[in-house]
Image (cartoon, rainbow, N blue to C red; front, side, top):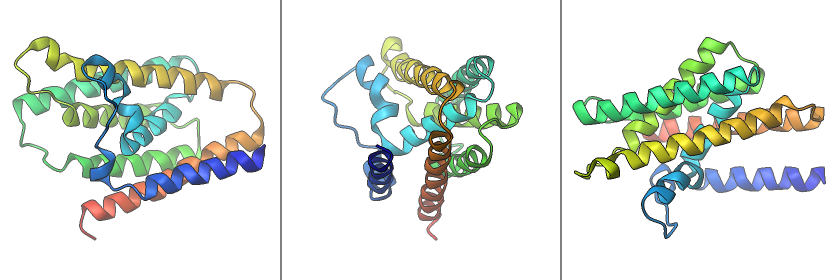
Length: 200
């Protein structure tokens, strides 16, 4: 059982490593509108890894930190959305920020799943801001514009609750070590993406 789980984790990390940032951002779900935005953070590998790290960061002191994490993500998302609206050219390379935050967040969660709450919330806030910047909709309809951030906030909040609840349960030590192993791999992958983005 443990061998199968380890193999699955390795396969998932390998799949992500072979996916470039540009390819990862292309999602073919066949869905449109709100359902597509709801699934967007889950089906794009680099964004899904951001959500995983944000959820582990938010799981520090269940359930309060999860609520704080969801709020931090929502505020950050709204800030990124507003920044894209009022200052569209202010941060053209925001994925550099995303990969840097992903790397730092992964390192923090690898060494301490109960990280210092203000630091965790700050990282989650920035992650929310990146999602807001990346998923701004130029459609003139207000309903169409708010669908991307609303769908993302709902799906991320649900994942935060699920991951937070799982990590708050009395789980085997090997599973906790497995989570740290996965976040360590995410940190390495984020460093590779960051280097690629910087042209190193």
